[in-house]
Amino acid sequence: MEGRPWKPAVVTRNANLDETVGRRTRVTFRRALLAGGLGLTTLLVVGGLLTALLPFEFSALVGLPVGVLAGLFAVVLALGAPLHAGTPAARAVAAAATVGYVVLGLAALSYANVAGFRGTLSVTEWLVVAVLAGLAVYAGLWLRDRRPDSPT
Image (cartoon, rainbow, N blue to C red; front, side, top):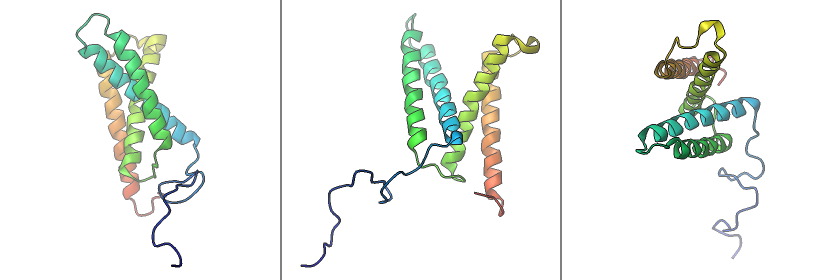
């Protein structure tokens, strides 16, 4: 019997899901920024929700470490995921990263009290601004990808 009609069961050391061998992607600066923003957003959402929803007094002692772990997990997933420009997943990651960075920027402005910013917006209003910015990024990327001469 010549040849094998089946694939060998042994997976080569650096095998990727698309049956190529070697490095699948390299981490670019843009991908690292997206992963960091996604991790920050995940930290804020998971940590904030657990802190608010747990029924005991020191809920932040549970909520924040779990949020940090969830954020780190999101960073690892974003760095390793095969995100291709122009896909809904890539747009969603960019929008979620925007939310985290906008909240971080508004918190920094409030902390430094730049131009009397402290107390101008509540934390709830920060979240509304951040979600609107994330939606604007998603819509902008979606419109860019719909153009026939789009680079993606």
